[in-house]
Length: 139
Image (cartoon, rainbow, N blue to C red; front, side):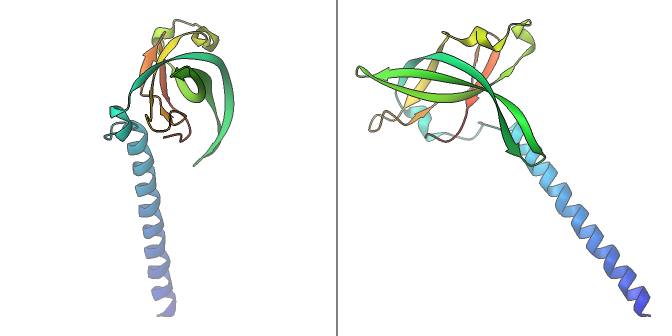
């Protein structure tokens, strides 16, 4: 009798663990697919023209461990004051084999907080076949 109850309990706990893992996987996939689709308070901020200054690959820790992320450094100016920030990018099929350094000196859109211009947001945009996205949390 005790072994029957134990086997049911072990089976139930295993089922719960599988359900939790499935929910986590679905949540992660949903977040990745909908990245940036939520309304954004920074969309109403003024826009400055930024220039990509550098590109690099950094190791980032995620749910499945460390993975490489392509990043870029950029600068922008507001009222003759210069600011800098970081963005991430992914290669699209339309890059036609261009290396990431092809982004250097490319112009991008940067939204900035009019009260604190050092706070910025880089909206999703495609430049030279690379998809640019925010990196880190400036805004």
